[in-house]
Every structure is written in C-alpha cells, then in structure tokens.
Length: 448
Length: 186
Image: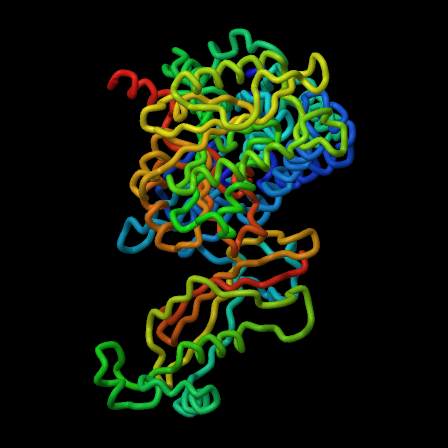
C-alpha cells in the first residue's frame, strides 16, 4: 500500500497545481453532500443523533470546502509554494535566497478516532491532498463502516487519481516497519497509543513526521465577574451542558473540567443539574431525543470505570446516575453525569483521567492565579473557554494560560450569538494542543 | 487544520539560493529583480487566464510640476508643510525642498497605467505593502511598471490579480512600490 501511494498516487497528485487539487477537494465535498442521506442512515448505528451526525458528515464536507477555497485564495496556481519574502544575500542582488515548500514524496498514514468517522477522515485528507500527498486512512474499527461508506462515495465520484487515497479497515499489519523519512503519520486517539506509535523504532530511526492529536482534559472557566444572574453565567452553564451531551460527550474537545469562583459553585451546580435533567436520553432517530447512545457497550464500561476513578479521587456525583438502566434494553446508553471536586488540587484524577462520554467535573477556584494554575494543570489541552465580560480578566487569564492550550475562546454577551462554540474545531484555526500529555504525565509520575 | 499551516505539515521547507531569474523559474512566480516579460497589449484588455505571472506593462512618463502639487493640495485639503512650504521642507531631515504628495504620486500612477474602457478588469479592490522610497520633487518625472505578481480565484466567476507596481523617476530610482489588487474576469 505504501508503494502504491508513493509510486502511483503521489506522482499523480504532484502533477496537479494547488488550484487543481483545491478544485478536487470541492468536488469530493459535493459528492459527499449529494449522498449524505446514505451516511445519516449509518450514523444512527453509531448511537449518534442527526444533529450529532451533522457535525460529522456535513461538518466533514464543510472542511473540504473550506480547504478548497483557502487553497484557491491563499496558494498559487503552481506546484511550488513560496514561504516568506526574498532574502537579499548579495550587494548587487544577483544572489538571493528564497524558502519554498514542495510536497513530501512519501505517503501520509492517517490513524483516526471512532468518534467522528467522516469528519475525522476528511479533516486530515483535506490538507494532505491539497499539499499533494497521497493518504492511507485507517479508521477506528468501532465506526469504520461509516468511514468506509464516505470513502466509497469519494472513490465513486471519480475525481481522485489512482492511489491518492487508500483505506485500511482493521489492523495495519507490519505497515510501520516500512515507513520512511518522506512519510507522515497523523494520529488521533489516546495519549498512550500516541506514545507507543511515536516511539516505534522505525518512526524514531527514520525520523518519520508524527502529528498527534490526543486526549485532552479541556476546561471551561467562569470568569470572576460572572456572578449568577449575569449573561455570562447563563452562557457558561449552557455551554458546559451542551458539550456534555453533544455526541454523548464523545468529543476530544468536550469540556471535562468546569471551573467557577468558589462562591458561585453551588449556583453552577444547581443550574447545570437542572439543565441536564431536561436532556432526554434515548433513540438517536427520535426527534425529541437530546442525547443518543455511546458508540458501544465496551465504551460505556470504560466511561463507568473512569467515573469510578474520579470518585475514588474524591469527586462526588452531583447529577446523573452512571448505573441507571438503559432506556432501550441492550443499548449503550448513559445519562449525563456531573461530578464535583471541592478540592481540585487533591483530586489529581480530575485533571488526568478522561471519561470519554457525557461526563464533566465542576470545581472551585480561589482567585485568578488559582484558575490559571488549575486550567494549566490539565497539562495541555485542545480547547479552553472563558466566560467573562471583563477585559482585564480575559487579558490576565489568557496571558497566564495560553501556553497550555491550542484554541481558546473568550465568550461574553456581545459575541455568544455568533460564537461557533467551545467544541467546534474550525478548518481555519489551530486544532491541537501543546505539550504531549503522555510525556507530561510521565514527568508528573516520576516527580511524585 | 490551522488553515494553510496544516497543509505545510505534509510539505518540506527548503531554502533555495540562486539568482532572481532562477528562483522565478523554479517557483513559476514573480520575483523582484528577475527579468520582466514586457507585453505590447495592455494587460487590462486580457482575461486573467490570458495573463502570465511576470507579464509587465511599461507606461509612458509624465512630469510632476509645482502647479500639480498645489492643485492637489487645494483640491484635497492636504497642505502638509512638505508639499507647501519650501523653507520648512528644506529644514526637515528628509527633504531637499517641497515634494509631491505620496497620494498624488499614486493617483498619477493610476492615470499612467489604467486602460479606461470596460473590460476584464472589474474593480480595484485594494493596495498592500506600500512604501515611498525616494521623494519626487517638482520637475521630476515618473513612470510605472505594472507586473502580474500572482493570480487566484475568489469564486468560479471572479479572479483576483495581484500586481507588483513600481514607480520610477527619470533617473530610474524607485520612488514607490506596492501591490495592487484587482478583481478580474477569470
């Protein structure tokens, strides 16, 4: 497969200009949109509602459109991309320097998570194909049938050159043993798997480019000014509840830690519990369903286990019941579970253990420095949101915490209506967090 | 993700050292200092697809008189000392006497390179990276070289051409340089 990508797909893609490849992305997006109902049917089988599926399916096509239009606006209709201005290197100007970008001549191996079978594939394929590199897509087994259906639509559209994309459903065999310095591995999943792949002897020896997006204990912070009754308080409660229930909380950007000034924590708990109680859990096909099922029973077992770890670390369940019966027998349903950690500096697990489901922990902070330290205690996250109407609070918080977070939203009454939300990665903005959590955790363990 | 930065994850960055001519050939893009391809047909008469990166239109030259400067000052209200007060201009560390307004130079430049009739150039949509490099004194003349720097599509129906504009005086010194953006028929 690597050979096919390197020898057939790569050369064919590199013959095209950036604009030609950008037009190809648009055609792929149109092909997916034209047959999206087939994908929505399969989407229900993953436990997701139609609304959840919209993020995955139409959000995925949207990513193709976005990269297509960026490619045509920001890249030349040529094969080589110039980087920066000409560097003068001589007095007469006959000898100058210029940085350029050209596509790598290997294959891009995309290893994707189960939670967004379509978007997860397309958010990686769009920049890869636009760059002019062929890809081998390896979806997570649990939802690979939906990825396969979207993949098939793209192949049947006939716009991709032979060898430009290939799909592996199941194990990758000895693929890693054959990687080389022109290949790229782009991984989404757990920190432990990322560490295992990143330290694979061939990846290390050949200096294979490795891009990882791994689990992250994203935080949302209620500003010190956002007392109960302010618009920011209500916006915060709504956002946390939304992030817990969309996709049944199986989103790498979901809010796992919700922090509030100690004086407002009771009010936060009460408002969140009330909101979550109104979320109807059930058949993802039903119109009145607020939250569907988890992807599988084993995923639900895993989430229950992680909730138990949080409880063991001192967090208390204040809303929801992880052991409640399923609304539909045999389904992987779980009610939203809200935990509270009154001493977040003692309950280490709330910053380290991620229940990948409809679960979040509220915790108090004492002052701005404490809020920053708690946010950064997650050791690197994909997304953080701060709800404040105070410009001073925003400046102090972002200045203290930006180094630990990939994307940060400051939400208040003036921008909430148009906000794209805490949990939505955007094609035009960074999606990825600083600091490898795996390494950070290892450091914390050895320091302890 | 992260826009075009995400694309670069799949590309290699390489430093190239050579002449401007070679770098223009390697990148198929406009490089200041590389030979320009002088064209005979005014580029405003060509659709974007008929324009090539590096195509250059050379204008005639015109003289800028003290009357031009005063007329512009009265007309626009911009009577900054450097244009209107010979002694104060001389006393400044930058000028040797009264100079033409930068905005007058830009306006005259447009007067030199614009081809007026309706055609594939639909509108002027912006100007970037403007630098005034050499003052233009009354009695000096100016001419323009207009080169196609890059082309892109805004939609299937509209293109954007980025032109490198260079304004020279009678001694071929660079007076001003900027990028002009126009909306074009693809």
